[in-house]
Length: 196
Length: 196
DNA sequence: CCTACCGATCGGTAGG
DNA sequence: CCTACCGATCGGTAGG
Image (cartoon, rainbow over all chains, first blue to last red; front, top):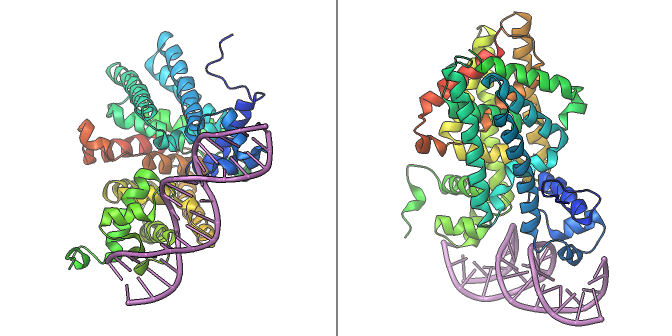
């Protein structure tokens, strides 16, 4: 049974990547040592090498797992026939929910990918560029339809992705801003900002 | 005798912080060694300690200089009597232009501040929280005036700041998206997204 | 899973 | 500004 996209947190690899996501997000990839990670899990550092060949390999698993989730979702959106504005809204809501449900991994994928070694770095950047180009295509189509106002599609993609990428999950409890309210408000601002 | 040392462009400290901003942005603070920085400047690593007491001190200079520029600008905006929507637009344009003109330093201030040592870390976080609270105040006032649509002010601040913070300056030349177009389009999306 | 350990590199200091 | 150098810590390996 193929399980490529999901990491089961029950497996040892899953435990490691989950702890690594938290540490990489909090301290950054470079400032997190394998000893830090081992201590957080409760083993000695060399034991980690029974599950991953290197520190970089852990980062790869995190970044490409998240990239695959986004790509898979976009495939589904493109398959389903619907107005372009509805596609954009679906994508925006998916991104927001990824931030809410997989915060640490998405954060690492967004901020620490530059530490990937070649050839994974180029692969990741290509996937990222491709993903954004596909979003820009949808926005261009929406502009032609007059569903969206005339803006540079690249600027629109950048605005959407970075606005959502800046969500700081830890503030939710502090400010009593609950998840649904955040989603509703951010969708409102972005969709109203874009629509004709 | 090195002629670069005292040019009109700035002091040696200025040369160091500028090179450090580029390296910290490209490789991250932790992955940049004092030897990397020294080599980029053309000196040996120990020479840097004639100008800064530690690697962290260089990060402090970058982060607090940027924080001061934003705080100073916000003071001016608050002083000047004008509609709340106009205040927000002025602030948005200032943030965009900071990204365009001081990209590397702003990027470092946005992404690498977590590596500041105490007590500077707490100081920085307090300034940041205070700055955002003041933006939220303006937005709340604008909502009361019916200049802005009713959204959670904190979500609005987050959306504005992270959208702008995600600007990737290097794409401008690649995509032939010039600076004025980017500014105009991003302001359009955000202001239309917010206004009543 | 562990202990023992390696070479490389780090931030920083001494001294001139 | 430099050379010489230090103790700490790093990612990773050997071997059981």
